[in-house]
Length: 203
Ligand code: MG
Image (cartoon, rainbow, N blue to C red):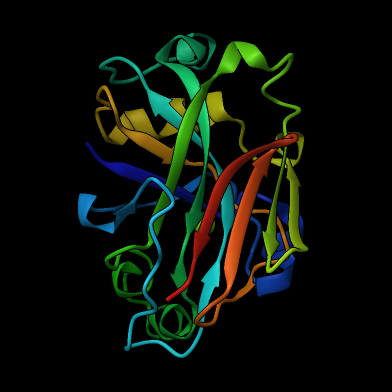
């Protein structure tokens, strides 16, 4: 399986990082070695002084697809989840300055925290799903999927032109504003609507 992450998909987050608004989705990959599941702790890597959380809605692909049309994209997923796209922001800034790829900042071990998945039928409208993140009990990020620049179906349509999607692939759909640094002993708790999806420690 692979993890596909969309960058710059929420306007206020683009503004907080001073990036340009994309005209097409921006995406990058994380390897299977980046995955943390079952609320296991995240160990801060020694190579960054600024690892930041980015809470994101996740989509799990349920069948093989290539050149998926937007109007059929909804048939390629049954479940959504919540994840953290951990980012070494100091390294990412250097990558951007130097015009280099982002892997050292985005794809390191443990950088993809993944929750359980829930049936999409639990939600009236997938384009109006609230999600949030608390750090040490304090609300730090709040998002709603209606604020995405590119919808889940548009993302699947776009990405599948370049990369075949396979069963079990997971898409991180972008983070809203409010990203921030984590430190040892922090606790992160993530929610979709009122359901707690993530609850883990930084070590
Ligand atoms: Mg992200």
